[in-house]
Image (cartoon, rainbow, N blue to C red; front, top):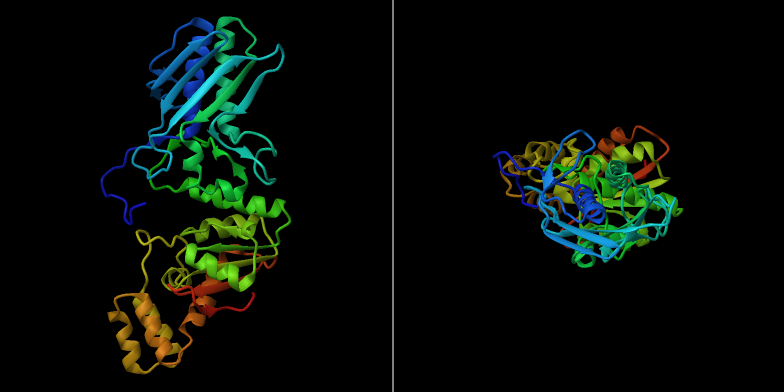
Length: 364
């Protein structure tokens, strides 16, 4: 993701679920008629009717396959350009629609996701969209609509390593995602959804203490400091608000927030989105914090001229001032205000760029 999204209007794209639905419709149409519609048009959950060009099509005895290249628009999506494939075969009479994971589509191996263990990682809304197109075509052609839908994503197993699927227990490939069918550039909805699923998986696996960290350095530091298992870590990234709001309705006993000094300074100042393109460190706030801690007038006056927040932290440490602790406690107060519940014990750990612990709050 680039640091600052472009100011010009951004082009929207299509989810893997929309692409899989369009490929399913094209393949089933070919299985019934011998002809692939190209382009193929589907109806999304909110009524939009996009059309998709086919990138691949194969019709053989007893099965049909169609493929669509995912266009994520201007969103920096790891699956942009991926080939999403649907292979349709008849199923036994009365079987309905059966979903299978082909190459590059993952399988659920842990409880806590909206799918049962052992199920292909095809989320509920895309499943509903595919069932709808199967039912519509079956009614149009006077057949029962009993089919097996096998979804694949070319190179999906490698692409999945760039996502949170392995940590969530989705193994072997990508998830087929989407609730509206549309990818909104820089909405980061997939990341926030992964945060939610990470909390769900931790809760379902009897994890009572989770940690949300801003990056890999802080995660390693928190793992060493608290001795938490991998399943306890939620990929919070810049989305402190997305994690905390979900925890408000899906609480766990203890939560650790770990992050770099600059990121957590922004949380301390009241920002819930910590991305550099959407919030900035307020150096006047740091100057006030230094004065509160008893800094000399000269040191406090230098803070607004600093190049980075880390520079201010260095000055404070040289002066023996616990600025890291001050930021941790203020960030904790912001987080507590979002949680709005005393059921969750919360601490904040501030980590510098080397992985050193430079600030802590108590448990609140």
